[in-house]
Structure formats: C-alpha cells, structure tokens
Length: 457
Image (cartoon, rainbow, N blue to C red; front, side, top):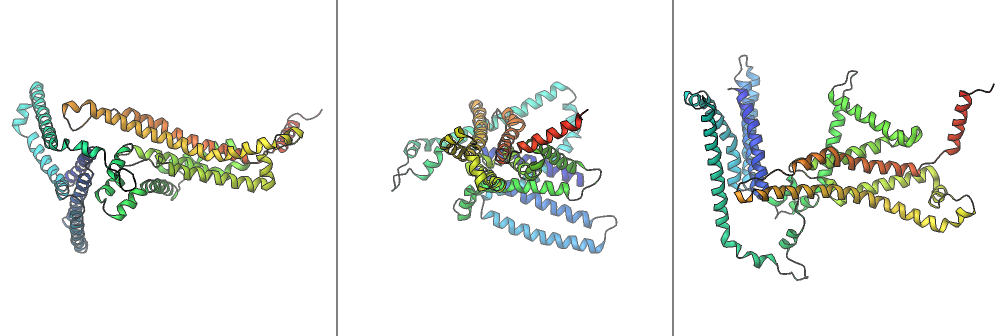
C-alpha cells in the first residue's frame, strides 16, 4: 500500500480511461468521450493534490513551514479544482463527467478488493487446479460477453422506432441557394479518425471559437509538430557534455547524418549553407507524418494547405537562391537552356516556356505527392479499421478486429520517413539545379591534383 499503491492506481486509471475514451470516440459519442476524459483528469488531479499534501505533512522529520505551505497549496488547489469542475459541468455531459470522476475511485476499490481476494483461502482453493481457474475465467468472459450483447441489443431496439424516419432525412432538402442541407453535406465526405481538436469542436459546436478551432486544426497540429521538434532539440543541446547523454547523442547523430547527406549532394561549397533548412524540412515533415499514428492526433500533411505552403516555401527559396547566385541575366540564361551556339539560340523559344512550366510544376508535384500519400495512408487505415468492426458486427461486441495495425507499422517504418525523404531529396535537387556549376574550376582542380600526383620527369 502507500505511495506505490497510489502510483499504480494512477497508471491503471490512465490506461483504462484511454481505452474507454477510444471506445466512446469509435462510437461517434464525442461529447461523452470529452466529458469522460475531463472527469478522469479532474479526479486524478484531486488524487495527485492529496498525495502532494500527505507526503509533505505526514513525514518522520516534518518541517512546520513546509507543512503549512503544503496545506495552503492544497486548499488553493482544491478551490481551483472546484472551479474547474463547475466550469466542466456547464460544457460537457454531467453523467460522462461523473463517470470519469468515479473511475479512479473504482480502480482503488477494485485493486483493494483484488488484494484481499488474492490473499484469501477461497481464491487459493479455486486456483489450486488449473482446470478450475479455466472454468472461472470462461464464466467471467461469458458473462461479460452476454452483458455486452444485451446492451447492444437494447440499444438496437431503442433505435428501431427512428429507423423509419431515416429515408426522409437521407435526402435533405436543398436550401435557398440550391445546396443540400448542412448535415447531409458533412456526411458525404470521407470519414477520418477523430482527433482531440475535432472532439473539442464537436462538444462546443455552437460556440464561434469552436468553429475557428475546427477550421485551423491542421495548422494547430503543424505548430504542435514544430514545438515538439524545438523542445527536443533545445533539451538535447542546452547543456552539451563531452560524454553525451542519450538525447544529446540522438540530436548530434541526426545533425551529423543530415550534414553528410546534404553536403554530399550539394558539395562542400554550397552544402553547409542549406543544411539547416533542408534538415529542418526533413524532420518537420517526418514528425508531421508520424503524429497521425498517435490516437486522437492527425497528420497535418494529410491536408493540401499544409503541403502547398511547404512546397511554396521551397519554390520561393530556390528562386531566391538562383537570383542571388546567378543574377537576373544568369537566371534568364538558365531558363533559356544556356544557349551557346546557333542551335541553342534557335531552341530558346521552345526551351524557355518549357523551363518556366517546369519550375511552376515543381511545387505542385511536391505538394500533391506528399498530400496524396499521407491522405491515402489515413484512408487505408480507416477502411481496415471499419472492416475489422464489420467482421465482428454479428457478435454485437463493442470492439472489432485491429486489422489496421499491420498498416500502421508499415506507415511508421516505411511510408512516413520515405515521403519526408522524397520531399527533401527533390528540394535538394532543385537547389542543385539552380546553383552555379563550376565546370571550369572543377576541371582546373582535377588537372592540378593530377599534376601533383604525377609530376613531370
């Protein structure tokens, strides 16, 4: 018992709450899921505050000043939690909030009961034989299955009277502008996994800020990815040591590999200048691709606005580099195909529009490729998750087969890093094509090295 018991209660409550929230969200009960999550957080915060006060007041060598500070903090924290609970009652369903609040208390009761049960002679008599244990386990599983099936049948029976009204609402009447009704228009789009911003916006759909939050949810996830990268890099380089720790070693390894990779493509003259931009671009895209695998998160790169913004950034930087290194006349010469003879000048009317169209097509191809692959991956996961639920729909159980898990692992290991690498590699090549090609200087250096290697006799 003691602090170890409280820690295990908190860990078990978080795991159980996560599973229950996922189940509620899978059933499109977003308001209840948000209310349940708020209730669990509220209860765990009360439990943590109580633990904080007890550990500083009831100690063998307690300091009166420290105990007074702890009690004052406990009173202030209790008032703050009371205000937060009252605010939550006005925003989320009260039943879901109460259920979430009682979850850690139920975990405490179940853990205490299980400790008593496991130490009782009755449990020892039941588990003395493995066959007795198997029978007890089968009875428990069968009882849970029957309870779940009865609940599912009751919900289906309760929904039966409203099924006859479904055809009347399936074809919503157009509004005054000839467009279909809002609910029908939203149901026609592809369904995605729910995310935390969508849940908050759905629970407060009548508030103006909720609509703005839903509108900019991909931007918020993109900013979260940038913040995550910044925190990790700052934490890894804040206090460098001669013998690096795991985080510093990870950051230094990423920087070193990125430097060698991009300098190997762009060369030692121009490569170091573009390593910060290209390395950040690769990490940023990779993290944005990967956070969509986390439950209740979403990949910002599955939205065309994000990928177009990054592609335009690369396009503007490439053109800026070309003007700075080549100048206006050099840029025009590059666009014209660098004509140096009569045939080259005769091909200028053809080469100039072709090169201009090629430059315009680069951001389009970059943005659409990344968007299509990540969006397609999300749709694939949704399709197989739906298929897993459909397979077990005849059993009326509140879960399905996790058929999407193999594709999630493939996405984490292959699709997400490869798409980030492809985007960054093409951006690197675009820079390389716009940089000056010092052919004469390169040949002179080769001749110089050859002369030093083979001196004249």
